[in-house]
Image (cartoon, rainbow, N blue to C red; front, side, top):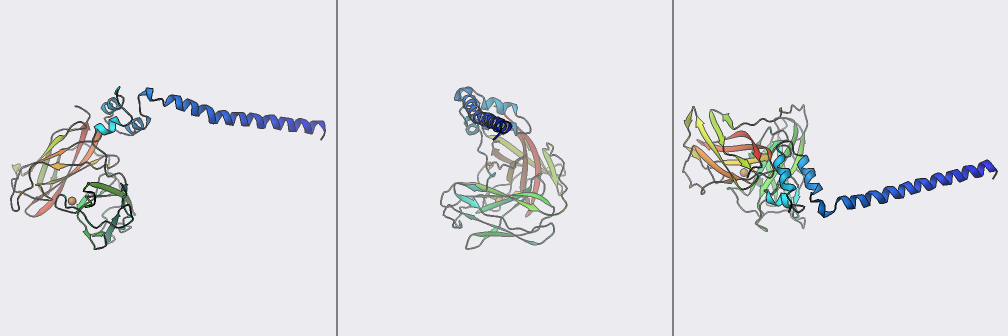
Length: 321
Ligand SMILES: [Cu+2]
């Protein structure tokens, strides 16, 4: 090795040393800094804050909740209604892949099964709102809502004849109570439907919808603290409709989904289960609670003269007490 060669090797050694030093610093310093930043004394929960930032509207009150002096990491979550319907698995219960037609206009079958932690198909369900399983299918923009009741085979496969009316990305939500646990579970999966997609423009607040001449008008405020009472009044040609028929154990069935991620709210109809053959109206009352402030998509199924119609309503939830 001559002098220039030795210098080159020496130089290369220095470079390697600096690289090593910077690498070690890069690994050590941020970790120490992160540890300091995430000290419990900070009070804020980065995960919760991240979730809040993801909200599109009405964040202010939610932020207050999560930064309350005595708020633990999940205090804000426990104070609000639990978020349901965003996962395909919960407590070992799994919604298996959904089989459905691939493209718009193809006639076929939508089917799926639910398995428990041991991998066996769940076949024993409790009846809730008149059915063992409620299937809600809606496109991510809130269009194409369907609430139907598939039939289960002896080996636990649920199926229903199915045709897609429009292309897009759909959320398939299943709402049920397995006999084994007695706990209500909502699991969901996303299904893509091929074809030209024409997304609906952003959803605007709408407290009234008319279907086949029947107008459903929503009153009441949706809040994140305490139960909210929502009332829907059904009229036809300006006259109150007083012959609402029982449907799914009440005089109407309300599905509420959070705009933006289609989280599924628990909604209780008010009053006792109607007797067979009885009618009511024009008001239907529901109790629910929003998990966060923001916009919610409401779908009311109501039955008159044996025909079930669905009204689409849109409401903003506030974080007010
Ligand atoms: Cu149902």
